[in-house]
Figure 1: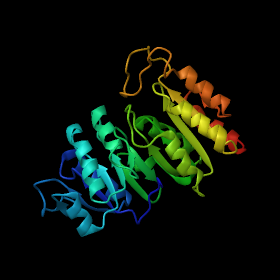
Figure 2 (figure 1 turned 90 degrees about the horizontal axis):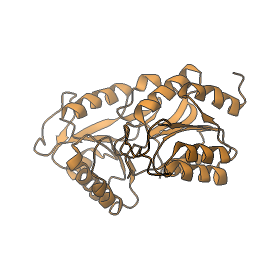
Figure 3 (figure 1 turned 45 degrees about the vertical axis):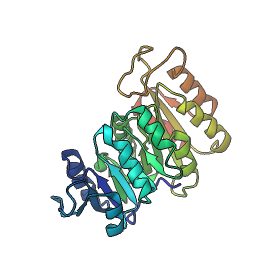
Figure 4 (figure 1 turned 30 degrees about the horizontal axis):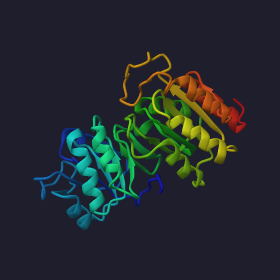
Length: 292
């Protein structure tokens, strides 16, 4: 399933009347995202400060607006139910911004939503620059181009993209997959989608300690994307074992999830790994054959 957005993507916001949902709805609208309404139980029939209709249920919202994509700004205890409600209403693309969703809730969702593209939870969302932004990303640092980006960290995404944009390397689509142990869309899922995208000619992968997602991505790259210019970065190299720093999934357990294993896997796949985010544009230009 695609990970791309365009002007035809009809977004509804779950939790649109909350302070966070309302604020970021305004920012998405300012970017040009096609927000068609929102859902907040008990507030159906009202209008938001942006003039958008509010519905009590996702089914009502979909029936009235033709919504195709969901963006979730609800408390952690309600995120799983929001995803399941959307799935039952026919939504097959959801971006879950909510942080702190219980792991068991996400396991339950994963087993009950076949065919649904879920970005997150605990993610900044995604953006196809110049087309549409869903989530909390700062749209002004992005520039339309041909570099795809996948990242477990939101703030690292913004830093890396700012460097790419300043270096004249625009982006096709940037996806913040989230930093939790159980997420809906992995590096490999995104790589599969980018491999089929004619706009994307190069990739940047920003991983971090914990889990094995980066190693699996490296194996996929070695098998299927060996000719694609790709640069990697691994955050959290100085984190002590057993300590969760920042993301719930960024934790080293014994020798599992170490930065060394991830860097080695990327290098074995022919992917250069930057020591610092600021090195990524230069390394990517080298891979693209562009004079630095």
